[in-house]
Image 1: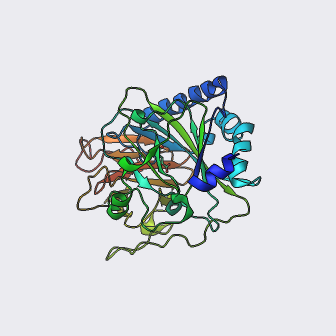
Image 2: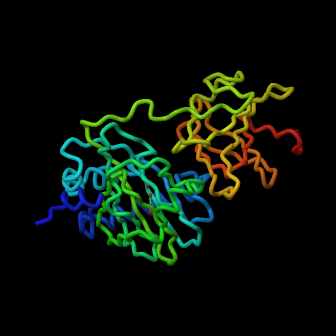
Image 3: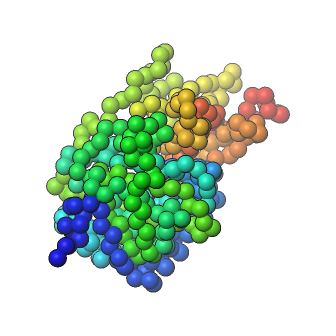
Length: 351
Ligand SMILES: O=C(O)CCC(=O)C(=O)O
Protein backbone atom coordinates (compact mmCIF):
# COMPACT_ATOMS: atom_id res chain seq x y z
CA UNK A 1 0.00 0.00 0.00
CA UNK A 2 1.30 3.47 -0.88
CA UNK A 3 1.40 5.72 2.18
CA UNK A 4 1.15 9.55 2.09
CA UNK A 5 4.88 9.57 2.93
CA UNK A 6 5.67 7.30 -0.09
CA UNK A 7 3.67 9.61 -2.38
CA UNK A 8 5.43 12.66 -0.96
CA UNK A 9 8.87 11.12 -1.40
CA UNK A 10 8.16 10.13 -4.98
CA UNK A 11 6.33 13.25 -6.21
CA UNK A 12 7.30 16.00 -3.75
CA UNK A 13 3.72 16.62 -2.56
CA UNK A 14 0.67 15.01 -0.99
CA UNK A 15 -2.92 16.26 -0.87
CA UNK A 16 -4.41 15.43 2.55
CA UNK A 17 -8.19 15.48 2.16
CA UNK A 18 -10.57 16.81 4.84
CA UNK A 19 -7.97 17.74 7.44
CA UNK A 20 -10.34 20.47 8.67
CA UNK A 21 -14.04 19.67 9.12
CA UNK A 22 -16.71 21.75 7.36
CA UNK A 23 -17.49 23.70 10.54
CA UNK A 24 -13.82 24.27 11.39
CA UNK A 25 -12.93 25.61 7.97
CA UNK A 26 -16.05 27.83 7.86
CA UNK A 27 -14.97 29.48 11.14
CA UNK A 28 -11.43 29.94 9.79
CA UNK A 29 -12.89 31.38 6.57
CA UNK A 30 -14.83 34.01 8.56
CA UNK A 31 -11.55 35.05 10.23
CA UNK A 32 -9.77 34.98 6.85
CA UNK A 33 -12.44 37.33 5.42
CA UNK A 34 -12.10 39.64 8.42
CA UNK A 35 -8.32 39.87 7.88
CA UNK A 36 -8.85 40.63 4.17
CA UNK A 37 -11.36 43.40 5.04
CA UNK A 38 -8.81 44.84 7.46
CA UNK A 39 -6.15 44.81 4.72
CA UNK A 40 -8.54 46.50 2.26
CA UNK A 41 -9.17 49.31 4.77
CA UNK A 42 -5.45 49.83 5.46
CA UNK A 43 -3.38 52.63 3.95
CA UNK A 44 -1.66 50.19 1.63
CA UNK A 45 -3.89 47.17 0.83
CA UNK A 46 -1.32 45.72 -1.58
CA UNK A 47 1.68 45.74 0.78
CA UNK A 48 1.71 41.93 1.15
CA UNK A 49 3.83 39.46 -0.85
CA UNK A 50 2.92 39.27 -4.57
CA UNK A 51 -0.12 41.51 -4.02
CA UNK A 52 -0.93 44.18 -6.59
CA UNK A 53 -4.00 46.13 -7.68
CA UNK A 54 -4.03 44.46 -11.14
CA UNK A 55 -3.32 40.79 -10.33
CA UNK A 56 -6.27 40.12 -7.99
CA UNK A 57 -4.01 39.18 -5.07
CA UNK A 58 -4.37 40.52 -1.58
CA UNK A 59 -2.01 38.95 0.94
CA UNK A 60 -0.24 39.16 4.24
CA UNK A 61 2.19 37.12 6.27
CA UNK A 62 1.74 35.46 9.65
CA UNK A 63 -2.05 35.17 10.01
CA UNK A 64 -1.47 33.93 13.56
CA UNK A 65 -0.63 37.53 14.50
CA UNK A 66 -4.03 38.72 13.30
CA UNK A 67 -6.25 35.95 14.58
CA UNK A 68 -6.00 33.71 17.64
CA UNK A 69 -8.36 31.26 15.92
CA UNK A 70 -5.85 30.88 13.08
CA UNK A 71 -3.17 30.16 15.68
CA UNK A 72 -5.09 27.60 17.74
CA UNK A 73 -7.61 26.24 15.22
CA UNK A 74 -5.37 26.54 12.13
CA UNK A 75 -1.62 26.28 12.66
CA UNK A 76 -1.91 24.21 15.87
CA UNK A 77 -4.91 22.12 14.73
CA UNK A 78 -4.24 18.52 15.80
CA UNK A 79 -5.07 16.81 12.50
CA UNK A 80 -3.06 19.43 10.59
CA UNK A 81 0.03 18.82 12.73
CA UNK A 82 -0.50 15.04 12.70
CA UNK A 83 -0.52 15.21 8.89
CA UNK A 84 2.59 17.46 8.83
CA UNK A 85 4.49 15.02 11.08
CA UNK A 86 4.34 12.42 8.28
CA UNK A 87 6.48 14.65 6.06
CA UNK A 88 8.64 16.59 8.55
CA UNK A 89 8.90 14.37 11.62
CA UNK A 90 7.63 15.07 15.14
CA UNK A 91 9.77 18.14 15.86
CA UNK A 92 8.31 21.00 13.81
CA UNK A 93 9.30 24.67 13.61
CA UNK A 94 7.18 27.35 11.95
CA UNK A 95 9.01 29.51 9.42
CA UNK A 96 6.00 31.65 8.52
CA UNK A 97 2.44 31.58 7.26
CA UNK A 98 1.15 33.51 4.24
CA UNK A 99 -2.46 34.33 3.43
CA UNK A 100 -3.40 34.76 -0.25
CA UNK A 101 -6.80 35.71 -1.57
CA UNK A 102 -6.78 35.54 -5.37
CA UNK A 103 -9.71 37.26 -7.09
CA UNK A 104 -10.51 37.50 -10.79
CA UNK A 105 -7.68 38.92 -12.93
CA UNK A 106 -6.04 38.31 -16.24
CA UNK A 107 -2.30 38.64 -15.79
CA UNK A 108 0.55 36.28 -16.68
CA UNK A 109 1.44 34.22 -13.63
CA UNK A 110 0.70 35.76 -11.15
CA UNK A 111 2.92 33.10 -9.49
CA UNK A 112 5.37 32.04 -12.19
CA UNK A 113 6.92 28.63 -11.62
CA UNK A 114 9.57 28.62 -8.88
CA UNK A 115 11.02 26.64 -6.00
CA UNK A 116 10.69 28.09 -2.50
CA UNK A 117 14.21 27.35 -1.22
CA UNK A 118 15.75 30.62 -2.56
CA UNK A 119 13.33 32.51 -0.26
CA UNK A 120 14.66 30.92 2.95
CA UNK A 121 17.01 27.94 2.58
CA UNK A 122 17.72 25.49 5.39
CA UNK A 123 20.78 23.28 5.76
CA UNK A 124 18.96 19.93 5.34
CA UNK A 125 16.13 21.01 3.02
CA UNK A 126 13.39 19.77 5.37
CA UNK A 127 11.07 22.74 4.64
CA UNK A 128 7.52 21.79 3.70
CA UNK A 129 4.53 24.02 2.97
CA UNK A 130 1.10 23.02 4.25
CA UNK A 131 -1.28 24.87 1.93
CA UNK A 132 -4.60 25.09 3.77
CA UNK A 133 -7.52 25.43 1.36
CA UNK A 134 -9.99 27.76 3.01
CA UNK A 135 -12.40 27.30 0.09
CA UNK A 136 -12.29 25.09 -2.99
CA UNK A 137 -9.62 25.71 -5.63
CA UNK A 138 -10.33 24.61 -9.18
CA UNK A 139 -8.16 24.94 -12.27
CA UNK A 140 -10.08 28.03 -13.46
CA UNK A 141 -9.78 29.58 -9.97
CA UNK A 142 -5.98 29.39 -10.21
CA UNK A 143 -5.31 26.24 -8.17
CA UNK A 144 -1.67 25.38 -7.43
CA UNK A 145 0.29 23.77 -10.29
CA UNK A 146 3.34 21.57 -9.78
CA UNK A 147 6.01 19.66 -11.65
CA UNK A 148 5.91 16.31 -9.79
CA UNK A 149 9.30 14.84 -8.90
CA UNK A 150 11.25 18.12 -9.15
CA UNK A 151 11.72 18.28 -5.36
CA UNK A 152 14.90 16.22 -5.25
CA UNK A 153 17.33 19.07 -5.98
CA UNK A 154 17.74 22.79 -5.68
CA UNK A 155 17.78 24.38 -9.13
CA UNK A 156 19.76 27.59 -9.58
CA UNK A 157 17.67 30.55 -10.73
CA UNK A 158 14.39 28.85 -9.71
CA UNK A 159 12.71 32.15 -8.90
CA UNK A 160 9.29 33.56 -9.73
CA UNK A 161 10.74 36.91 -10.94
CA UNK A 162 9.92 37.76 -14.56
CA UNK A 163 13.62 37.83 -15.49
CA UNK A 164 14.18 34.15 -14.56
CA UNK A 165 13.33 33.46 -18.22
CA UNK A 166 15.51 30.35 -18.73
CA UNK A 167 13.84 28.68 -15.75
CA UNK A 168 10.32 29.66 -16.93
CA UNK A 169 11.03 28.36 -20.44
CA UNK A 170 12.09 25.06 -18.90
CA UNK A 171 9.05 24.94 -16.57
CA UNK A 172 6.13 26.77 -18.21
CA UNK A 173 2.94 27.16 -16.18
CA UNK A 174 0.99 25.52 -19.00
CA UNK A 175 2.88 22.18 -18.87
CA UNK A 176 2.35 21.58 -15.15
CA UNK A 177 -0.03 19.38 -13.13
CA UNK A 178 -2.99 21.19 -11.54
CA UNK A 179 -3.89 20.18 -7.97
CA UNK A 180 -7.56 20.93 -7.41
CA UNK A 181 -8.71 20.82 -3.80
CA UNK A 182 -11.76 21.34 -1.58
CA UNK A 183 -12.24 23.53 1.48
CA UNK A 184 -10.48 21.84 4.42
CA UNK A 185 -7.92 19.98 2.27
CA UNK A 186 -4.22 20.62 2.83
CA UNK A 187 -1.61 20.28 0.10
CA UNK A 188 1.77 19.49 1.63
CA UNK A 189 4.67 20.17 -0.72
CA UNK A 190 8.45 20.24 -0.43
CA UNK A 191 10.16 23.62 -0.85
CA UNK A 192 12.18 22.34 -3.82
CA UNK A 193 9.04 21.26 -5.71
CA UNK A 194 8.65 23.48 -8.78
CA UNK A 195 5.25 25.17 -8.38
CA UNK A 196 3.27 28.25 -9.31
CA UNK A 197 -0.26 29.30 -10.23
CA UNK A 198 -2.27 31.18 -12.82
CA UNK A 199 -4.83 33.98 -12.51
CA UNK A 200 -8.26 33.25 -11.14
CA UNK A 201 -10.64 33.54 -14.09
CA UNK A 202 -13.85 33.16 -12.07
CA UNK A 203 -15.86 35.45 -9.81
CA UNK A 204 -15.25 33.12 -6.83
CA UNK A 205 -12.15 34.18 -4.83
CA UNK A 206 -9.56 31.46 -4.14
CA UNK A 207 -8.52 31.59 -0.48
CA UNK A 208 -5.50 29.79 0.94
CA UNK A 209 -3.03 30.01 3.80
CA UNK A 210 0.44 28.53 3.26
CA UNK A 211 2.14 27.37 6.46
CA UNK A 212 5.88 26.84 5.97
CA UNK A 213 7.43 24.48 8.51
CA UNK A 214 10.75 22.72 8.92
CA UNK A 215 12.32 20.16 11.18
CA UNK A 216 13.74 21.14 14.56
CA UNK A 217 16.80 19.03 13.64
CA UNK A 218 17.45 21.28 10.62
CA UNK A 219 19.01 24.77 10.71
CA UNK A 220 18.31 27.98 8.83
CA UNK A 221 21.20 28.33 6.43
CA UNK A 222 23.70 30.85 7.74
CA UNK A 223 24.96 33.47 5.31
CA UNK A 224 22.38 32.28 2.83
CA UNK A 225 22.04 35.77 1.51
CA UNK A 226 24.78 37.64 -0.25
CA UNK A 227 24.36 41.42 -0.04
CA UNK A 228 23.80 43.10 -3.39
CA UNK A 229 26.54 45.38 -4.69
CA UNK A 230 25.97 48.96 -3.57
CA UNK A 231 25.09 51.37 -6.38
CA UNK A 232 27.86 53.90 -7.05
CA UNK A 233 28.08 56.81 -4.57
CA UNK A 234 25.76 55.18 -2.02
CA UNK A 235 26.38 53.78 1.44
CA UNK A 236 24.66 50.87 3.18
CA UNK A 237 22.03 52.20 5.61
CA UNK A 238 22.84 51.92 9.31
CA UNK A 239 20.67 53.16 12.25
CA UNK A 240 21.15 56.90 12.70
CA UNK A 241 22.32 57.43 9.10
CA UNK A 242 21.86 61.00 7.86
CA UNK A 243 21.11 62.13 11.43
CA UNK A 244 17.68 60.43 11.38
CA UNK A 245 17.53 58.28 14.52
CA UNK A 246 13.78 57.63 14.24
CA UNK A 247 14.22 54.86 11.65
CA UNK A 248 15.25 51.74 13.57
CA UNK A 249 15.18 49.01 10.89
CA UNK A 250 14.54 48.54 7.17
CA UNK A 251 14.03 45.30 5.29
CA UNK A 252 12.94 44.17 1.86
CA UNK A 253 10.41 41.33 1.73
CA UNK A 254 11.79 38.27 -0.03
CA UNK A 255 15.07 40.08 -0.64
CA UNK A 256 17.04 38.94 -3.67
CA UNK A 257 19.40 39.89 -6.42
CA UNK A 258 18.73 43.44 -7.75
CA UNK A 259 15.93 43.95 -5.19
CA UNK A 260 17.31 47.19 -3.81
CA UNK A 261 15.76 50.28 -2.27
CA UNK A 262 17.37 53.70 -2.07
CA UNK A 263 16.76 55.74 1.09
CA UNK A 264 17.32 59.51 0.88
CA UNK A 265 17.42 61.51 4.13
CA UNK A 266 16.80 65.25 4.03
CA UNK A 267 16.32 68.28 6.30
CA UNK A 268 14.78 71.58 5.14
CA UNK A 269 15.71 75.13 6.18
CA UNK A 270 13.29 74.90 9.12
CA UNK A 271 14.89 71.72 10.39
CA UNK A 272 11.99 69.43 9.33
CA UNK A 273 13.15 65.92 8.49
CA UNK A 274 12.08 63.96 5.42
CA UNK A 275 12.97 60.64 3.93
CA UNK A 276 12.38 59.29 0.47
CA UNK A 277 12.30 55.57 -0.24
CA UNK A 278 12.68 54.52 -3.88
CA UNK A 279 12.54 51.09 -5.46
CA UNK A 280 15.58 50.46 -7.64
CA UNK A 281 14.41 47.07 -8.90
CA UNK A 282 13.94 47.24 -12.65
CA UNK A 283 14.26 45.20 -15.85
CA UNK A 284 14.14 45.98 -19.56
CA UNK A 285 11.16 43.72 -20.33
CA UNK A 286 9.33 44.00 -17.02
CA UNK A 287 6.41 46.23 -16.07
CA UNK A 288 6.51 48.44 -12.97
CA UNK A 289 4.06 46.03 -11.27
CA UNK A 290 6.31 43.06 -12.01
CA UNK A 291 9.14 44.93 -10.28
CA UNK A 292 7.05 45.97 -7.27
CA UNK A 293 9.15 45.87 -4.11
CA UNK A 294 7.62 45.44 -0.63
CA UNK A 295 9.56 47.27 2.03
CA UNK A 296 9.12 47.23 5.82
CA UNK A 297 10.45 50.09 7.95
CA UNK A 298 10.38 50.28 11.74
CA UNK A 299 10.36 53.49 13.73
CA UNK A 300 11.10 54.63 17.29
CA UNK A 301 8.13 54.23 19.69
CA UNK A 302 7.24 57.95 19.64
CA UNK A 303 6.61 57.90 15.86
CA UNK A 304 2.94 56.99 15.46
CA UNK A 305 2.15 58.70 12.17
CA UNK A 306 3.95 59.74 9.00
CA UNK A 307 2.91 62.07 6.18
CA UNK A 308 3.41 60.95 2.60
CA UNK A 309 3.40 63.16 -0.48
CA UNK A 310 1.14 61.33 -2.92
CA UNK A 311 3.18 61.01 -6.08
CA UNK A 312 0.05 61.11 -8.28
CA UNK A 313 -2.16 63.78 -6.68
CA UNK A 314 0.61 65.86 -5.05
CA UNK A 315 -1.46 65.83 -1.82
CA UNK A 316 -0.30 65.05 1.69
CA UNK A 317 -1.58 61.68 2.99
CA UNK A 318 -1.39 60.83 6.72
CA UNK A 319 -0.11 57.27 7.27
CA UNK A 320 -0.90 55.64 10.61
CA UNK A 321 1.84 53.23 11.72
CA UNK A 322 0.89 49.80 12.99
CA UNK A 323 3.04 49.25 16.12
CA UNK A 324 5.74 51.49 14.69
CA UNK A 325 5.84 49.62 11.37
CA UNK A 326 5.40 50.97 7.86
CA UNK A 327 4.83 48.39 5.14
CA UNK A 328 4.75 49.72 1.63
CA UNK A 329 4.88 48.32 -1.88
CA UNK A 330 6.52 50.49 -4.52
CA UNK A 331 6.06 49.71 -8.23
CA UNK A 332 9.50 49.38 -9.91
CA UNK A 333 11.27 52.71 -10.34
CA UNK A 334 8.92 54.73 -8.11
CA UNK A 335 9.56 56.38 -4.77
CA UNK A 336 7.63 58.04 -1.94
CA UNK A 337 8.58 61.11 0.07
CA UNK A 338 7.60 61.07 3.75
CA UNK A 339 7.95 63.41 6.71
CA UNK A 340 7.23 63.19 10.41
CA UNK A 341 5.11 66.30 11.05
CA UNK A 342 1.89 67.61 9.58
CA UNK A 343 3.20 70.97 8.31
CA UNK A 344 2.64 71.22 4.54
CA UNK A 345 5.29 69.86 2.20
CA UNK A 346 7.33 72.59 0.44
CA UNK A 347 5.34 73.86 -2.54
CA UNK A 348 1.97 73.05 -0.93
CA UNK A 349 -0.46 75.81 0.12
CA UNK A 350 0.52 77.18 3.54
CA UNK A 351 4.17 76.08 3.29
O1 LIG B 1 -0.85 30.29 -3.63
C1 LIG B 1 -0.37 30.17 -4.75
O2 LIG B 1 -1.05 30.02 -5.75
C2 LIG B 1 1.12 30.16 -4.95
C3 LIG B 1 1.88 30.60 -3.76
C4 LIG B 1 3.32 30.29 -3.89
O3 LIG B 1 3.80 29.92 -4.92
C5 LIG B 1 4.20 30.40 -2.74
O4 LIG B 1 3.75 30.87 -1.66
O5 LIG B 1 5.39 30.04 -2.86
